[in-house]
Image (cartoon, rainbow, N blue to C red; front, side):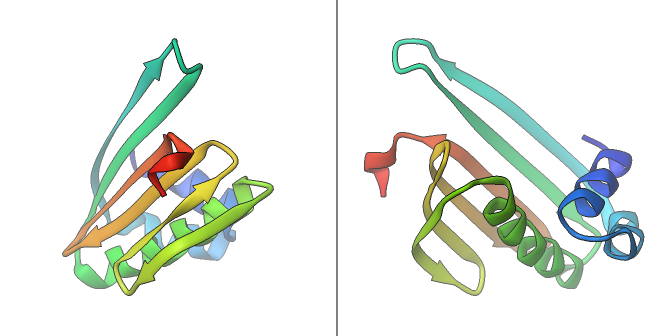
Length: 113
């Protein structure tokens, strides 16, 4: 995912203004989808790097709200300034920020949390 895809994500779950403000601060990202066929589960591993801790904090706050918007239900198990864990429609999730990097794991077995 590049700056364009992040801009689209920011606009879809936020606003055009937020996308224009935050997307240019994107510096890189990776994602992988891991499939457990036996459990009929797909796990998303996602990491994005931003040009500053401030931009990463803004994106972390945005992504937390994007998770709430993309799922019908979201239950938070733990929450701190830089981490949120819980469950959503796709299973358990962990969203974290460390420095200028935001990571997310989504679709873990629900019994994790």
